[in-house]
Image (tube, rainbow, N blue to C red; front, side, top):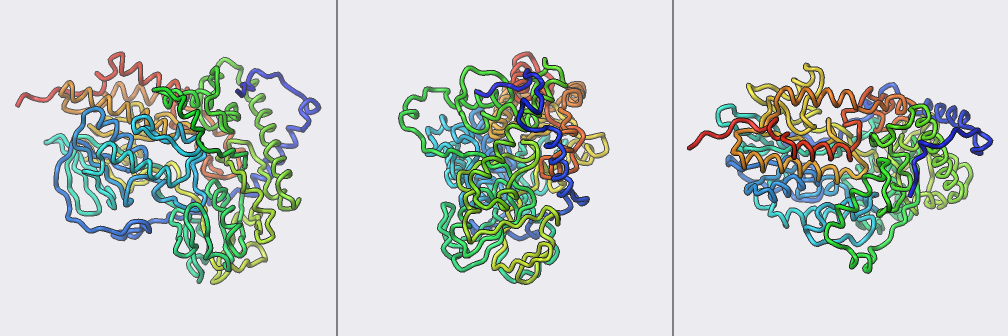
Length: 610
C-alpha cells in the first residue's frame, strides 16, 4: 500500500536526483504555451435543434403526451437516476418514472460506444448493485457495452421500464402550492404530476466541440466520439474499423477518450493524424479477466467492503489491505488535489505541501520515463511527455496508446504553440504552416463538465410562489442547500451530484450513497405522513456556512496547471462547492444526521386526515 508523503522530511536536489525548481519552471513554461484568453469559450456545445432527435442508436418512437400522476419522477437515466429509482423502489415507492433523453438507460454509457471504450475504474466497485443483481463483471476494467448492459439490467431488475419515458427531455419543473406536488413538463408535451422529484441529469451529458474556424466547410466526414458512426468506419466497440483502411483520419483531442480510441484508429486507418494540445499522463492499465477462483471466494457484503476500502485509500485514510490494488490506489497520496480530505489535517501545511509536491514530481518523472521506454522516436516521445502536476488533468491508463506512435502510418501533431487546431478547410486540418489533408475528422473533445441542466438554465425549476431556482441562486449569493440534496422553497425536490456534497474518483459510489440517503428521507416522510420534505432555513444556512468554512481552496494549485476541465480551462474557481473534509467524513456525517434526529429539519407538517 502507498504511504502518505506528508510526514516525509525535506530533501535536497542531490538527494532527490532532480531539481524541483527546474521542474517548476518547466511546468510554468508549458502551461503558458497553452493558456488561451477565451477559456471555455473556445468550445461550443453539440446540441440538437429544438424538436429534433439526435440519437444514432435508437429510432425515434412517436407517442401521445402523458397527463398522469406518479409517486416519483427521476430526471436522468444514467447510474445516478437508476440508483435513485432503485433505492426508492427498495424503500417501498411503487410508481416511479425515470425520464431520459436517450433511447434507453445508461447515461454516458449509452452515448459513448466508440472503439476501445472501457471504464478506467475497477469494475467490481464501479458497477453498482452487483450483489443485488447477482452479476459479476468479466474484466477488471469493464468495456462500455458490458456497462451499458448492466445499466439495462438494473432497469429490468427494479421494474423501471414499466413507467419510463425515453427519448424525452424535461423542459420544466413547477411546484403546485395548492396540491403540493410537482408538475413535470417535457418536450413531448407531457404534463405529468409527481409528489417527489429527483434530479440526476448528470454533468457529462452535453458533448462539446472546439470552435475551430471553418469547421462547417469541411467536405469529408465529421463526428464526435459520443456519436460514433460505425456505418462509416465499420467495426464495433471492440475494433475492426475496416472501412477506414484507405482513409486519412484526424483525431482532435488526447484526453481519456482518445487514449482508448487512438490504438484502434492507428491500427485500422490508412493514416492517422493525432492533434494534441496537451499530452495526457498514461500509466499502466494491467487489464485482466475476472479470476473464477476469486469470484468463488466472495462473501455477502463484498462490494460494499471493496468500494469503501478504495474510497478510504484514495482519500489518504490508512487501511490494512488494498483490495483494488491498481494505479489509482498506488497513487493515492496524490488524489488530495482532486478529492478534498481531512486525513492530513494534523500535518503542518507547509510540510504537507512540500512533501506532496516531491511525491508528485517523482510520479510524473516515472510517467515521462515510461514514454521514453515505449516510444522509439525521440522527437515524438518528447511531445508525448506531460509537463504538469499529476492531478492537473485526469490520469489515464493504457497498455497500447503509446505504442501506437511507433507505427509509420501514425503522425502526432503538437498544437501547443498554436493553442490548438487553427482552422479547418474543405479537405484539411491546419496547424501553423501545414495543412494536413484528411478524409475524416473525429472530435475526442469530451463533454461539458460540472454544468447540470439546472446550472445551465436548460431545466428551469419553479418552487413556492413561482420562484425560479437558478435565479434565486444567482441573485442570492450562490447555491443554498442542505447537504446538497434539498432546498428551502422547493419542497420534495432532491438533487444528486457534487454540489455542496462530496466527490470522489469512483463517483458511482458517491451517487449510490446519495441515492440511499434520499430514499431514507422519502421513506421516513411516508412513514410520518409528512406533507413535504423541505429544510428549515436554520439548517440550510448552517450547512452553507459549513461548506464555506470547509471547502477546499485548490485555486493556487489549479492556477499553476496546464488548461483543462479540472481548472476551468486555466481560469480556476476560487473555492469549490464540495465538502472539504472529504467523502468518508461526509458519509459519516449523513449517517449521524439520520440517526440523531436530523429528519426533523426537513420533514414538514403531517397530512390532514381524509
